[in-house]
Length: 321
Length: 240
Image 1 (tube, rainbow over the protein chains, first blue to last red):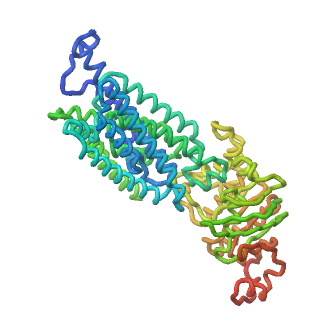
Image 2: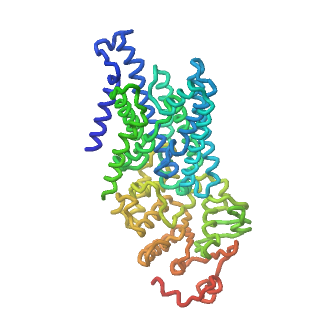
Image 3: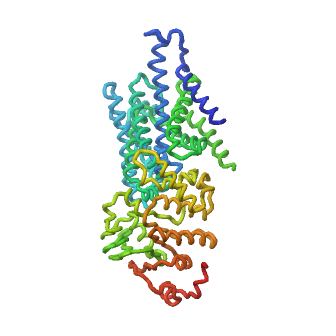
């Protein structure tokens, strides 16, 4: 019942979402070329909804992947410092003045991806020295890295001009404001690559969700598969963060929400998690736009405000028995 | 047959086992003090521990075997369930033992599922097959771990302290199953449980001071006292 309600809510918001915003659309003008409504709908609203959907899917899939690979419910790209790495990379690109119109988009994205990717490599390298690898120590490492990156970003702020800092601050707030189809297509590509790689290795992942040792003893090359899936995930996260900035909470809560709503084994939850994450972020984004505040409410605030209480409800309800 | 040839292994630069040469042709029970290197010996056989020297199973160097082939020749039953996702059902959990036989990127086959039903029936677990792993008692959990290892259809099965968390009644049940499995598998048992080792009645391999050796009069009170440094009497009362 709860499931049905949630999906109905999600799908209807998804369909209505492109029509919500600061400017009311004239539906009769929608298919008329060069009309304001046509441009608004096809160049701003629709790309944004599609982008939000892929962004939510990437965050939820990555969260699920990290929690499974490292068997810890707190593991996400966010808590492991990978998002912060991407933010720092993108911040450095902005500070270096690489955010020009010609090369701007590309170099900020590239630096964002490098930040995420290098952080993953660093985590994998450092985890070799941990006795209880892939567990609490790794999480602590991620938190330490996050704090380190935040401080490094402060230095970038300190050295930046006020114009650059304004760009940086807006960037770190996270925003789904995009124009045109370039970004949704790019993100869609990496999102599908991530989904595909996870689906391809779903049986290995199922074994690894038990324990790393047990998976190896059943014949899974856990090191290779961890590395491969982390690569796809950091690619997707890097691309996402470099375009939209960091969006917290989705990667942490969506996999758990899906787990509570669908208590089935991991390999059957992959597709549901991707869809749920996508719809969830579109839902949150629709609310930021429907509120019609002076300037747009950062998306991360809404994901936390809506996701938090629902998450707590599910945890309490789940522990009642 | 398992053979070790001049095998050494270290942890944090300190040798745990040194220049071990050994042939295990049949069932064996491995005993020794805490920290003597029993678990390390098992990790070596499972390919989980780096080492110097040669380890062969039926003449094949395990360093040359793929993880999948190794899984087909050795199954490992841990002392306790180490699991992140406790919502998995018993049936789905046992099915994971079939991974090495599954075609890559494809689902588990009907044969795999049939094998799972067979081992569940063998261990009287059929009525538990839809329960979640998180809902089982320690005794049931140990049985399910054995079922998963049996689904692996390997010649060698390693039991790592199978009774460590069990009460005497469940220890007896597990002991009976292990003894039965000796008919079809080469059983390697690691344990501190002298009653169990006595009941299983396999040759005793004792690990002490980075060395291993077969013990012939292990269960003699004097010998036990010499090995463990504490007095024993009348051990055989254990299992009928």
